[in-house]
Each structure stands twice: as structure tokens, then as C-alpha cells.
Length: 270
Image (cartoon, rainbow, N blue to C red; front, top):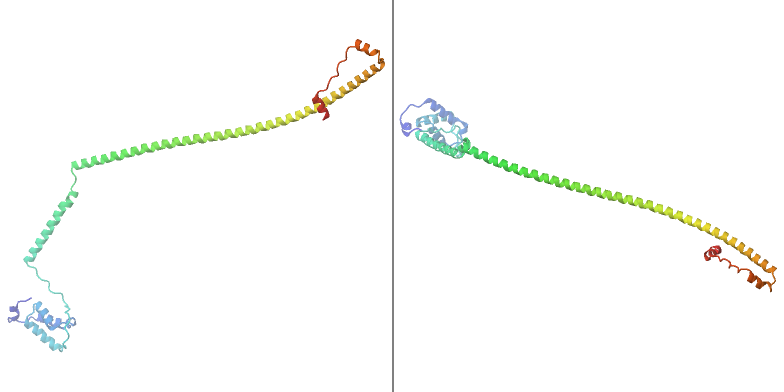
């Protein structure tokens, strides 16, 4: 922005600035802005009052005056002028940048640098010892696990052997029981056949005994009949009164006739 002395002092109007002002005032995009806003914008661009009046007069001759309109927010067609920085701005920027850089460096030294620097020998030895201790612990756990697994395997093998032995014993018992049953069946069949043969033999013996008994009885009866007839014939030849004592004294006493056993009589009756 120009100083008031520059605007009020006599100077020759700059033709290029006046032409730019005329172009700005004739731009349709700024027609909705008020005159005071347009004049303020031209003053901010460094135009003097004389140059602004000259531009307004040229615009008034070229175009008829526009009717007054309601004020609207100004839509500047050109971006505002970039403010120039002096040494104080640069000093403030340098101080702020230095403070930020110092803070970043401090944080990096505090948190990032310890992780980036290489570890010393003591730290490496401690880490190695810790790793070795961890390795020994893991190896011990693995050895214990191997021992436990081996013990479980031996136990399972012993159980399997015992189960197989039990199964073999049961199979042997079953086979022995089956063989005993078969032997018993054979013995029963043999006993049955022997009993049947004994029964048949006993029946045949009974038949033979019965036949022999009947034959013996028949022979005995025949002998008795012949003996009786003989006695009768002998008794008929002698006198009944005189010969009886002499016969009884001279002849030996006759033996009693043999008796037939009772079981032979029963079998004969049957």
C-alpha cells in the first residue's frame, strides 16, 4: 500500500497503471462489488487518487453508469498481494526452526540413538549368556519330554504285552475247554456205545441162559419121569407085604431127588 503523501503529491499519472485499473473496473466479475471496495483494491495495488479518478472517468465515458445495486460480498478476481517479509520475520522463523530442530535432535538422542548405536561387548556377552541359558533350559525340557515319552512308550509296550499274554491265555483256555468238550462228547459217545453193546450182550446172555435153563429143566423132567417109571416098575415086581422090609433092609436108602433152583423155575415160568 502507498503512503498518503504519495497519493496527495503532484505526480504524472502512469498510463500502464491507469490502463490496468480501467481493465479491472470493466471486468464483469467485479461489477457486483461496491465502488468503495474497488477503489480500496486499486489503492492496495499502489495507484494514486489521480490515477484512480482518471480510470473512473475513462470507464464512465466508455460505459454508462450502472444502476445502484445491493452490496454483495466482493469476489476479487486477483489474489491479494503477498506481504513482504522483513528481517524480524526471518529472525522469528529462524528461532522457531532452531527450537523445533533442537527438540527433534533431543528426542532422537533420547529415544532413537540408543537403538541405533551398536551394542558393546558386555551387552553382547550378557545376551549370549541369556541365550545359552535359554537354550540349556529348552534342552532340559526337551530331555525331560523325551524321558517322559520313552517311559510312556515302555508302559504302553508292557501293557500291550500283558494284554497279548492275557489274550493268549484266554485263547488257550477256550481251546482247552473246546478240546475237553470234544473229548467229553467222544467219551459220552463211547460210553453210550459200550452201554448199548453191554445191554445187547446181556440180553443175548439172558436169552442163552433161558434157553439152557429150559433145556436143563426139560432133561431133568425127562430123567425124573424115567426114574419114576423105573421105581414104579421095580415096585410092581416085588410083593407088597414080605418084600418091603427085606428091600428096605437090604437096599441102601435112596437119595432125595435134586431140587430145581427158584430162579430157574421163575425163568421157566416166564
